[in-house]
Image (cartoon, rainbow, N blue to C red):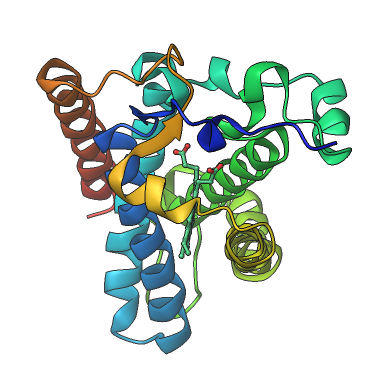
Length: 233
Ligand code: HEM
């Protein structure tokens, strides 16, 4: 199948796909997750920063959950929840009606996004009640039974940690595969927001109003995260 991709059409126009809040979320989350892994490996005093980064990750993930309902068109969950038949079609090389699968997250990309978000949410949640049995406990540790804290800690330090690392490595490998093997640059749009698409393709709203809304949502989720941190003080 050699269907012409939307970006290859001569009359293509630059169209906003990833709004600024989604892009800021993405790169901040990436830095936060990498920082959390590094500080966990260093241990000792670096665990203070591990917990701070974990709380920042919590605020970012809560932001993304809200943004999945009120964000720009292509950032909304509704734009990238696909039936299994679409995943199968995409794997066969189909790019969907009007190149639909190549605009926002593809059916396969969407699965990896949901897996990443889920695994990161579980990682942060288990960290909130974890106990390293030396000097560090999560801010909600004292609110749960010790058996639950033990199980959460085991998940957080063993399974969860490796799941996060594995998914991140797969994620980056997939992006690089698209770049070098399929000659499709997904990184540029996640940086500047735009893709060359067929005229008439709906764009994601990314105006001042939308950005103010994002600022309000992140202020709220940061406050919630800060409040949770205070519970452990
Ligand atoms: C710890 C590191 C990372 C994490 C946790 C992460 C997580 C995510 C998440 C959650 C999304 C979905 C964005 C959304 O809809 O909100 C995403 C998309 C994306 N990420 Fe990452 N990311 C990481 C690192 C990277 C790096 C290093 C690159 C570039 C080399 C990258 C490139 C992309 C691209 C291009 C997309 C859009 C994929 C598509 O078009 O469907 N990510 N990432």
